[in-house]
Picture 1 (cartoon, rainbow, N blue to C red):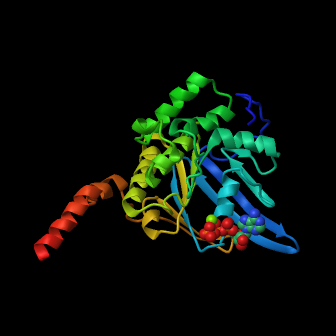
Picture 2: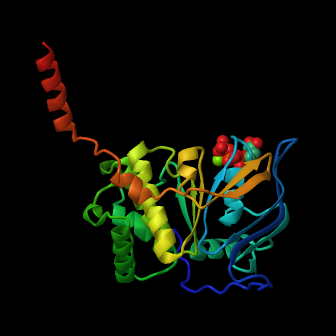
Length: 280
Ligand SMILES: Nc1ncnc2c1ncn2[C@@H]1O[C@H](COP(=O)(O)OP(=O)(O)OP(=O)(O)O)[C@@H](O)[C@H]1O
Ligand SMILES: [Mg+2]
């Protein structure tokens, strides 16, 4: 894998606008062409997200949510329209410039975790720093710090297959944070997790959002999960169908406190055995 120079210069155009607008998408369209077929995944979508906001994006399958996340995260460029990330016009950037911006400003979390197998939790978290050309000792220090933030200091040496789904997602979250990005994008981060683990992950997102003023944008199909955000955007047919604040926002830490602990497996078995004995 190729290392990137630490501070590779990128020529950027600073434009006017509120410095609090971390994302400004102006009439963006994204058209995919597969053979003769054109798919209009985004149709002139306009959206502004301010620094430190916690946004949930919802909408039916195929409505353009992931496409929008890919544009926001500089993984893909709009076919038409403008996109300003922290005041910088990224819609016309070339691939390598875009990769630079992405590595410095965006952290990604995916539904399927996307960890590198046979590579420890610590090394997985170090990876973005390796690409950014950060030295070995500094990489370790920052990766350990990121794992501590997600509560996994005691799992640094575990391989992904030695971690639960929730722990793997927390490693992925640490990896997304390690470059100190301005925004974290998560496409269905709780899609593969059980209820309690989902709330645990949402608790970390809420904490980072509150304490570090990190801008968090998640895509979710679950109405429950969207209530941990402060604003819900509904995407339909490549456009924004509605955009509204969450009236009675849920606090994940509080929900966790009120959630019954799931008994450990051994206790579970004992309890079941106890029940069957007492019934007979
Ligand atoms: N790389 C691609 N090439 C061609 N068409 C694509 C590509 N990516 C997405 N599309 C199409 O664009 C439309 C929007 O897809 P997108 O993945 O953004 O939907 P989504 O809202 O994320 O759906 P889901 O909830 O199922 O994940 C779909 O019709 C899809 O088939
Ligand atoms: Mg999707």
